[in-house]
Length: 348
Image (cartoon, rainbow, N blue to C red):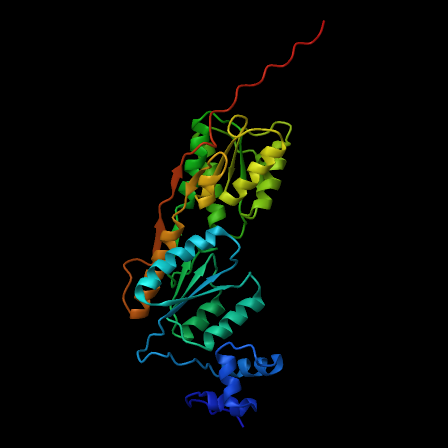
């Protein structure tokens, strides 16, 4: 026996088709763990197939719940976004469900299954491409979406909140060139991310503005995390003609550069200047405090949450694309390059 097409789907109908009890289906819908994997898989497949959505507990049509989805959560960068979102949702009496899909298709599918099984007022996706199948499913569920810091060129149908990454890359490079640095190393972020490419383009524009040539030897690939910053910093410092300054396109990578400099027996900024990007809380507490490009992460989260709540109310947006300004924050990790050390005189 199957659920009739066009009939309103109920837990009772799903339970009948799955051959289980109504309480069992209810436990699956509510995310309880006391269900066998085989039963859970069968029930979730039927929930997905029939597009079942749990009714909101409140009498209104609003669920008073939004979803905030990251690729990863192991970064203080994500914490800043969450802080901005929470400031808005808490004031509005709306709950926030935070998820991480870890760039794995199976995790994304699981997340979509969870969305199908319950109500949501909308979804905020961070550094996402918003794949067409995900966008289509959210539309089917009548769940508006906003993308924060889109990974690629965003769809014209989806509002986005970003930052002026190109301008930030330019200002960091111009700052170093203005101090007199002529060999400026750069550690780039993941190639797939639009923000990484924009920061790299800003770096190249800064070199051009200072009449400095681009040297591929001075560029290293990173992934925004400490380890890649350390490896990139070590590689740059071990060059036969090393840079006098390094611009790492995230604060975490800049902290990795700090460790590479320490292990090399050098000092910041006396021997080498370092610039980061993000202005995470740890930047102020680094030793020395890190010069960095401030990205308004909390403000981006705040605007994304406000946008979702407006869309949930059916309000029109003035503009679907917002870019918040970045700002260079100069601290103690940058200085003019050191003068060449005199070579010891050779013995006659």
